[in-house]
Length: 473
Ligand SMILES: Cc1cc2nc3c(=O)[nH]c(=O)nc-3n(C[C@H](O)[C@H](O)[C@H](O)COP(=O)(O)OP(=O)(O)OC[C@H]3O[C@@H](n4cnc5c(N)ncnc54)[C@H](O)[C@@H]3O)c2cc1C
Image (cartoon, rainbow, N blue to C red):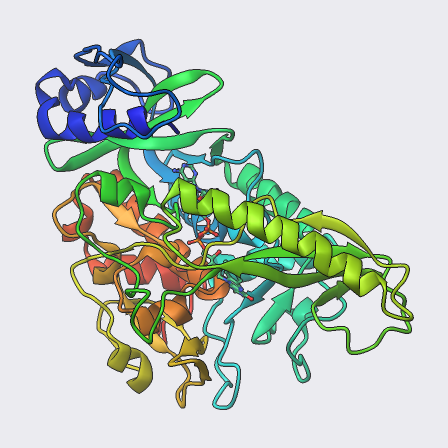
């Protein structure tokens, strides 16, 4: 994604709405069909002769854009990570024609691209942990992983007293990332979700403050896809932020509570069975481990580039050093994550901001749509275990301020850093996805703004789909 593109999208939202054809004309395209409409912006060329080659300039280049609107769907989910996949499944199951868009050629987000192969947070890690707080479509997804033989032999946490094969899910489930990609594809196909891979969402389509779709870039060029309701499942809150929703920045790096850093996960092969206590997530002789990383702003492409280069170079040396240890000569670097795993970027401000005290006290909300029981792993430098069975995620934390037509999901929802540390884990992220996809579908089908959605109807649908909300159907 070029700097020019981003400049263009922000300029467009600031001054180009006159040329925006979205709101009125998109209605002419039938849901699920291809349109021949276009989304035009004014072009202007900037003279570059003043800037030296290889140097940073403050100039901008305004592109002349005419973007075809190639499709329209009732629900468009931007981002195919754990939360986006479950959101798309939920939206389709609730009856909406649904499209899932993903920048990579496969699904699974940080669980597959980031090689973070253990789903944490199906229940509290320590007593009290009788309640399995994540069920519903997330549990169906785990059942598909089990069916595919995609559960790890060993992971970092004990599983005693729980039988994954019977749907009794422990705190953490280690998995095979290739099976996870297939499990997602199988369920999405069965549920009738349409897919668009290899597609970066680069801007929202806007009609005033209402998101009416997304603009994607891919090998097919720049294309607009209209959506009655869009779910922002990008992890980074890209759609919400670019549409003008206010957001919280990660904690200032100078504070004690630094943002959670990024890490490059990796998988080694050839691990001899005799090598015990090797750590990581193990399937036969293959073990996924946490690798080097760093901090900084993971929305800054130069920082991301630095992290990739430094982490990959260091990881290679680390594995060569491992191979020199007696008994470890057979191990080799089998795979690195597609990209460095980013833990924390934007948290979008919503109708309610879940507070640190909500997480610590285990607050219950009348508009509960999911529960997060995962500990806060970096709370003032320590893993903070809850003394309750989980805090509620209220629907209001999925509804961004100032922007209509958009529902948040996954790690960008509206919360302070403490609850973020908990709810960003993949099991709660999936439970939140179940709710956001269902909410988006109900809003699209009843032509109601997400902000005005009937919470009781949402909860009733979630309970009918076996979500855990600590209330009766
Ligand atoms: C190093 C590391 C270790 C972690 N350890 C654990 C752990 O042990 N257990 C656990 O449960 N969680 C862990 N987490 C947290 C967890 O992986 C994430 O918080 C979680 O994946 C968030 O889910 P998500 O669906 O919101 O976002 P993501 O998993 O980030 O998925 C977002 C998806 O959107 C796509 N996307 C992003 N932007 C765009 C765009 N503009 N256009 C199109 N597609 C886009 C991405 O490619 C991705 O597929 C860890 C995270 C990291 C980084």
